[in-house]
Image (cartoon, rainbow, N blue to C red):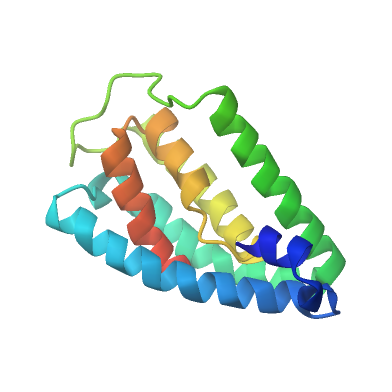
Length: 167
């Protein structure tokens, strides 16, 4: 939503336009994520046993990212948002199926490799979501499916649940 508002709406070309577009997008993101999370929860498609480390890291780092975005300014923020959205879109066009390994058993424990992956990506996604002002759901979806072995429904449910709080 942020790139569309910045690029297509002249009102958001002002000095504070990227910040206003981000606020509007996050408000809709939060409401949409909460309703969607409830639906995924009802169907038992949220796995916080495998996603809790990323959840904690993302919540901890998005504050630092939003502070860095405030210091960076409007031009850097809007340009970075457009670049990141474009990159993620290309990634899903090139390789839409993210199931590169056997799906993990829902609720199974994390091994040391999964913990390291969760820490690394949780911290970077948390900073990025705070900096760019997004929920981070698409990036979390990639990490949950490719690196942590979640099936797509559970990965979507878990990332949407986390997005409720990051938005």
